[in-house]
Length: 145
Image (tube, one colour):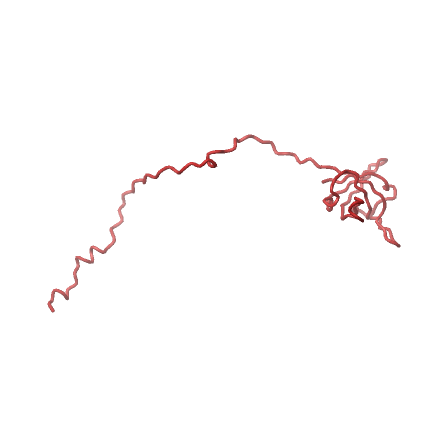
């Protein structure tokens, strides 16, 4: 073999080196404008909408009696009949307010469940304080939704 083949070729290695980084900025590429679709071009007109004030809906209920069993009556719970036309199963967990007509006293409570058959439209009410006076029987209270 000849000596020429044993020597490494320097010319071939210089061609394989990566090109040096240029400091000149590249020209911005020209792209075609994005395609316009009908959904992107239709925008709702902006209006200055006022925030809606949530108006409380009130449902009337008449207190019929205390909640009781064969030997006890529970004075902090009552049975009430729903007078308005609504689904009484959705009232569970809603606030109940009973205002006494002769005084400024207010009894507050929560609807805890339905009572009896669903067609009877009766609900159970648990009062926040110690209990309800007997004067409250047959009074009409408000359930706030």
